[in-house]
Length: 195
Image (tube, rainbow, N blue to C red; front, side, top):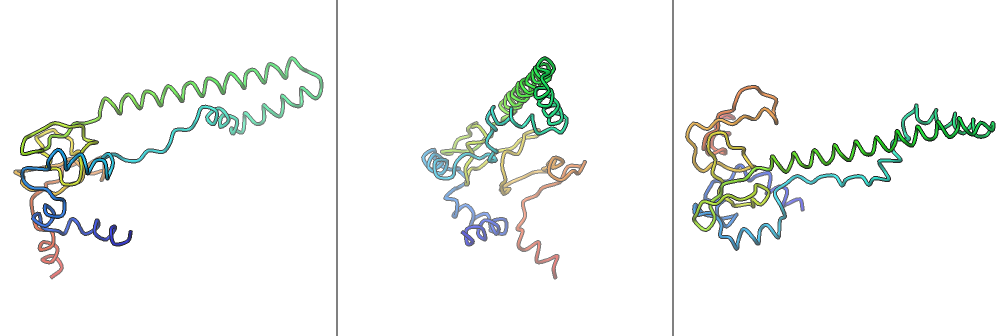
């Protein structure tokens, strides 16, 4: 596992020809068969999400709030003292509060999922020597991705060719200006700076 991590960390230092060979790609892109095999082997190009909490767990978590605990204790005291009406009123309010909280949480999760599906970008790639548009989560290692002005960058990658490319990295770095990108040999450039 450690060797795999080391190899992945050093990818940015590789020459483009070396990377093309390692990823079994070419300027004609991957074949559909290669892409399908890599997708089955490596999985989708997306971040892993935490599993969603079940409804019963969300319901129980509403009772962790300090005020809710105090009200539960008051309700129990009312029941022990024989004031069943006060107990039922407090208990009913707490149940209603918990149900409303769970419903709102589930609606918010649904809205986020819908937004995520709406904003799921497509990627233009070269496969079998032809330009194709595929869902960005189906990108695999070795795909040749084509970008135009205004496109989202759908995955990490190396530039093969670029003309006055600027990328808005604000979501990652917080910078307000676009970063200029160019095709360079990273190993020789970093050696120049250290000399």
